[in-house]
Image (cartoon, rainbow, N blue to C red; front, side, top):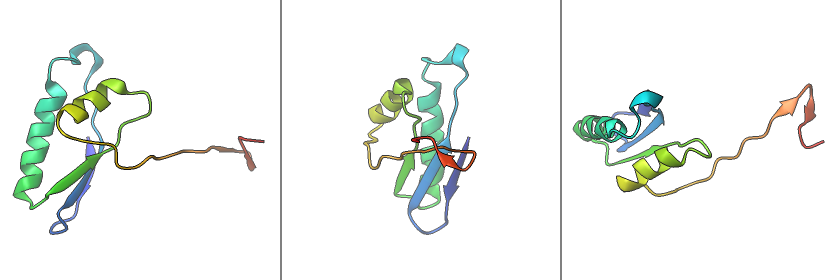
Length: 87
């Protein structure tokens, strides 16, 4: 798990959270989010966001159940050996 929380700015980001495949669907991700949110609240965070990899619908559902909503779309483009992958 990794993230960023600058003291005093009221905003935090969770960059990654991974639940082992064999224990997914048992509410672990939600419980981890509870702990994270509690810690953020103690630090004065009033808003946080999390990135979900494209196609990870299970993670997106987990976060949406907790009140998260889409806020931006991140697009990635690869450059291979000095030329665009679109060439």
